[in-house]
Length: 396
Ligand SMILES: *Cc1c(COP(=O)(O)O)cnc(C)c1O
Image (cartoon, rainbow, N blue to C red; front, side, top):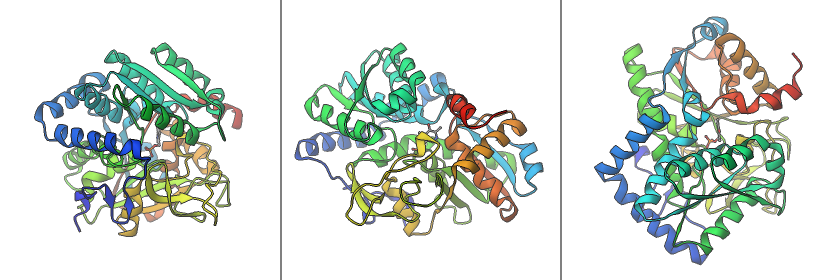
């Protein structure tokens, strides 16, 4: 199995992925694929990418031994990959840096993006500001109200945040609106997609940009432990921080990989965002074929997670493929387990994780006794953005 040679030239990961888009987007996506294939082979592009990751974002991020958590849980030796220490507070900037460099190379001067919780919008507005490009971010009206601080942050950074009033007024509708803009302004505009989702080449390209996480972690653990870890654990929204950590280890057969989805209030229709649990089945959503939470008629189900970054009906197509191959295992953590992990990690390590990342920590807390050896948990982001929300749920 050539696990690390996916996707095929048409963007398929086995039966998943591909490109399901209106006719008007076919040529632009092909142009983007060609430009990316060219860039990834260009040493100057790779050096420029590495330069900004280092000088602007703060890479490499530490691989930190969580000593007290290790002792407290009495199971495996636990390391944290500290993506929370990056500029703007999460892994998302790895991808937005890569894509804006590509946009620049393609001669595009206008950037658009969609955002749910606002984290990807902030990471996009940040790099657009740094490169002096015009930036428009589409965001559902409901999300704008919930994430007012991030809306203000994007505006401070000079982005034009446009409210989307259709449907549920959240992420899915914002993506549709961004696609519409892209079709209309294709000559001047690059669409920076925020996770390993959408049509080819996005799932491949975003994975490649995020795979710096695992390349670093692999070197760091070999230096510290002189051996590979027994397991890797990461939360899975669209799937970019997890595949970013896992990718460099795919061929290391003895390294277990565990993706943790948002279990919400429990696995009942409309109450969760775990695409590989009950309610998830093969479908097509927003450009790609993959596991989707939908009813028997193919209607997209409502989803719920306490963590906005995990609250989406589809999972990246490469995850569906690696699950079929049994290379990655998938589990979930519920809202209340994640909230408990959020507090536990804060108190015991002095690290307030993003609610998304708290799902990965929750998995480790729950299964510590069954895990062995050394594990790496991806702390995909910091929890500052979530503090107000948690304060309403938990009285201290
Ligand atoms: C957006 C986000 C996620 C979920 O997205 P993935 O593409 O699955 O990584 C996870 N953690 C943080 C901190 C995020 O901002």
